[in-house]
Length: 146
Image (cartoon, rainbow, N blue to C red):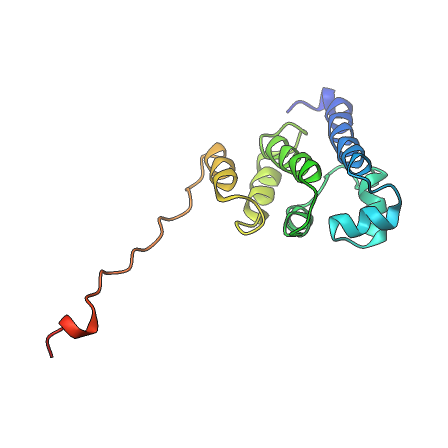
């Protein structure tokens, strides 16, 4: 993306992170302690994210993984994180191709639904996940010849 609109793309990213904060409040997590517990992060990390003190890079793939791996993450918060992942991975926040590739590579298959991960990888014209290996069919032990 052109540098001329760099302030605009930074603002776009900050707005999305503000939406994450709003989703936490809407889900009933008002205090910093409650928000940190809801996200599965430390207070200081939560404060840094929600106060938009995350430099210009936004949320890292590792941080997104940590949040999405939280089993009881509120669905509204999860939705905002997944929207953020899709937008960041598509270059919506002005990152260069190397940064985008690194971000996509760091998103965990376990943290994000496999379909979303495949979409992200495909959008980068990268090799999609290798097909799962099939186990050879086996016969029951009684029918095998010795």
